[in-house]
Length: 77
Image 1 (spheres, rainbow, N blue to C red):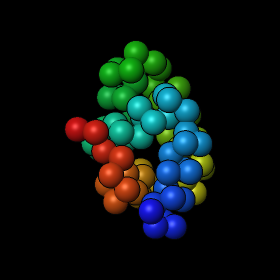
Image 2: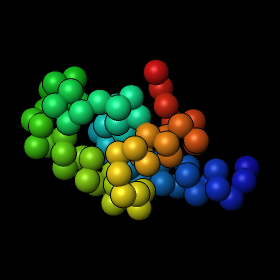
Image 3: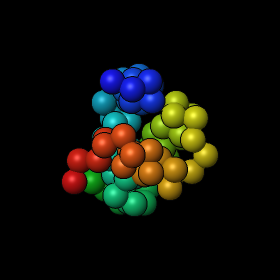
């Protein structure tokens, strides 16, 4: 396993189960409103999950989260 893959696995493990679910929806370019509806949560809560994901992965945008997920094969379509 490469160092980069190992680091990605560590980042993935730091996310809560719900954050992982949200990350997979971000990777599908879903909006906070769509994420909220799909997971039966408020749009504000969806936004909080997105913020936590950005912080935990040290990324600055949803697009970068989607790219990170794709590069590290964490997409589950």
